[in-house]
Image (cartoon, rainbow, N blue to C red; front, side, top):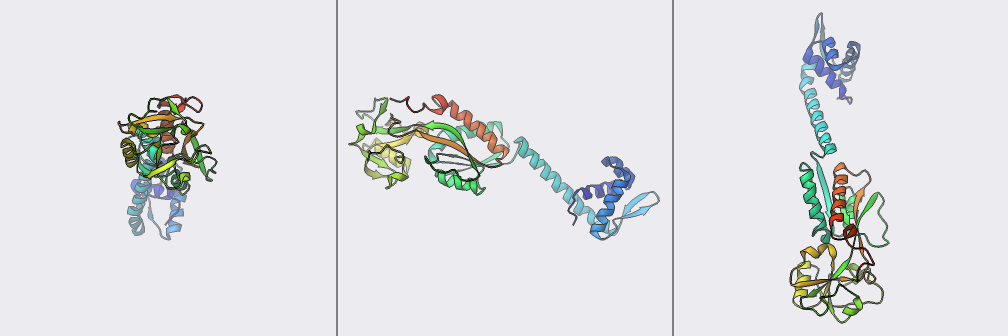
Length: 308
């Protein structure tokens, strides 16, 4: 079959109008240009497509066989053009979105709600998981945009661009009525005698990873699920670190206090996109930036040095 799909358009115009001259007029070509393109198509097919008559042309048997196939190619190309235009104008398409867990508590759903209102024709799928997983999916071409919290000093994978969104402080969750619950900010040393609830045995795999050297929490309970962690805090079994992005979803019988950034540095939250990001990904990135700016404080949260 011909590789130049424009030849089909010319063939269909001649078949419709019954004349090289009429087809040329409809297409805005010269009559000789139409004749050459039909001849090129016939050479590629290996058969005459039109009988040349004294006044006009008519389809041969080969032309009648080719006609429905040419129409199908035209229709599929027309559909492709429509879908590509929808991608460009955000009237259609798909956005594959990823995010780490605490980002899905407030930042991502708020942004997604705004995006759905602005671009209702774009379908959004969302995957939750650790940041390293999402960076890998971006590299593999399996996600279009991800909200990540890359490890400090970690190399950015080749082909991935990070777009800073906000600096996120850490909070400590205390049971209601705790003696330190009324403080504006706490140092970890003030909590040295507390039992800490963590998500993994290795502290390097938890929110304690960037904690200032010298503080080793007493880990009395391991719970990977946030509901279990906060339930244990509420029951008085210990305290735990909570990212500020998750603060809005914390239960009412738990008190949150800011941890001084000298002890637990603010966490950098970014959007990750691949090279050649889609129009939908760039549009969602803009909404993420707006949403981050609208969170309490400057640039999403008060920056290091403003606590305590």
